[in-house]
Image 1 (tube, rainbow, N blue to C red):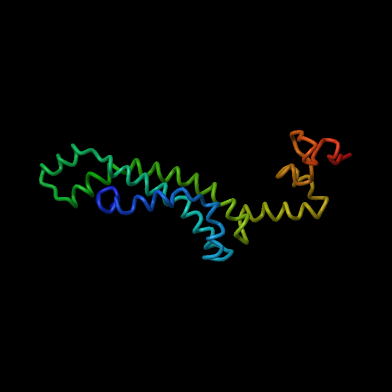
Image 2 (spheres, one colour; image 1 turned 120 degrees about the horizontal axis):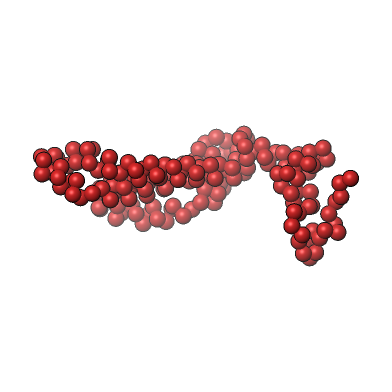
Length: 175
């Protein structure tokens, strides 16, 4: 909220935010593993990384777009700067904040699966990776693995050029 209200603070921190916000949570997995190890903290960090900038930018935009006429009307009615901020700016920014939180929720779900596949010992991504690893060694899990990842067992739902070694002639048949 202060980034949208204090111009100097915004001018100082905006270049740093714009630089860091383009680093995807998937690209931050190695850093999270180095900093926090394999476990829950690395997942929490990656979810935070994937959501923080979305909410921050939307909140800043909401504060910037608070109607000046409402702020001036409150000032004419005798409100001080704190009252204007609390009673005018924050309620005007709420739709932007909620929108940022909704978009960030979707981003958090998209970032948790790769994080769990590479840097966790529990969760959906970890279990998916564990099933795929087990299916490579155990034939009775082959059908489940085909459903989850069709190319795991050498089959592809789309015919590929023979130069890749995955031509239809090399596909295993199940009878």
